[in-house]
Length: 90
Image 1 (cartoon, rainbow, N blue to C red):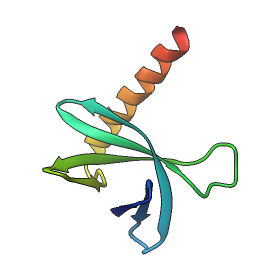
Image 2: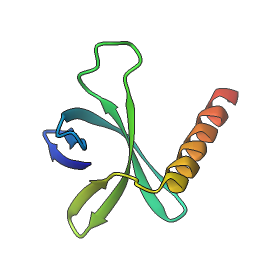
Image 3: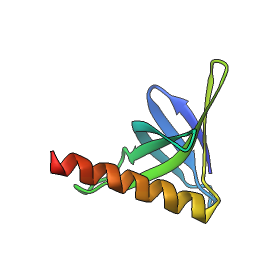
Image 4: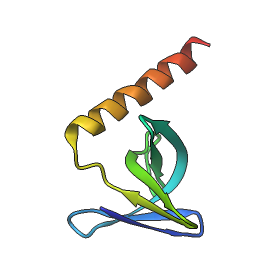
C-alpha cells in the first residue's frame, strides 16, 4: 500500500489499485516506532474500517507504510486493543 496526503485526507492505494480515502485518527508509539490509525472517510456505515499503517517522518516529510510483517501487525494491534481497554476502565 502507498499513501498520499492532500487536504488532511490520506489516499491509500491498495494492492488492487483501489484508492481508499482516510482521515488520520491518531498516531501512537510502540517499540520505538510510530503507527497511524486511519479511518475510512467514505464509509457509509456507522462502523468505518480502521487502517493501521507505520508512520515515518524524514526531515519535513511524512510517510505511511503498510505493515507487511504479520507478527509486527499483531503486536501493534494487541497494544492498541489494550489502550482501548484502559480507556474503558476509566
